[in-house]
Image (cartoon, rainbow, N blue to C red):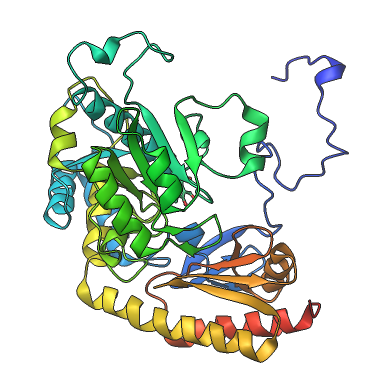
Length: 421
Ligand SMILES: Cc1ncc(COP(=O)(O)O)c(C=O)c1O
């Protein structure tokens, strides 16, 4: 039943036309409604097909209609278990954690429900660990923050780590931050510059640095591996946790299972989400043995984290994404795609730069990227932006070279139709 609302708070729907019905307007959605997917193609309710070079923003790594995902869901449903509380043991979550440990540097895995939540977890684990490092008594000493002195968290210029209240302070996008100030304390952003990091990373105050090895939302920027190596040495010496946010660039996207494998650096924690459970909401924090030893029952938790259904699906997805043949495919078609994008840039003269690795590419354009994305959609191609003048291409990892070539042809045509500069 509708409740009476004072006229002053009745939304002015005429001023904000919406195609989204009752959904809160947190997204500017494209007008078509997606009703079906198959392989690398989505279909709208009018039967129009769209080649997907966006993968639900790096989620649908296996494309649409993957039979293994359907099997894994059904297997779980057959047990009658969608959810079991974390107060009890279940097999899929334990197997998934073991898989993660067997395939990475990590000693333990924590499961949650999204990327932002994974980063929140990593921040808490870093602070928890840091408390074990300071002299006895110092952890509760009244200081300017009334808390453990070694608590500060540093992220890098251009970073995106999510939008919940804690990690928002580590996300470097003015329009996401400004309306929600004051942001969480003890979290700040440093330049991607080793000299500034050297000055910022005070061993007594800083407990963690978080880095996306390839910044996604920030413009598809591969963080310099030399900088990462120096940062690793510096953080190890100062007992600061190095956290890699691999939520967008991990799990096969760069052609290795984990993004850190491309950098020559082993972090202390990594965070995962997006493709992890094939589109079901799931995040993870993988931690090394030292940090694992510091985390105690009650320190953190989440009702749904690592439930049997999502974990069973994630196990299937991880086994597929860890398949050396799939990873080799990503490296091969990814390298081809990068070369083809650069050649297209040279041919058209409408592109300022091409950046990326694996199947994660950014294309800087003269024309506003949003306009190109809209025209691409009209032409049956889904691509993304990463900032005002950067296109972002995140195809499903199973995409063929022919489909990439088809997408590229459309991008070239559309960019060429746009203004010269
Ligand atoms: C690198 C990175 N970290 C964190 C997040 C936040 O993930 P979620 O949207 O699942 O909270 C994203 C999402 O785009 C991301 O790309």
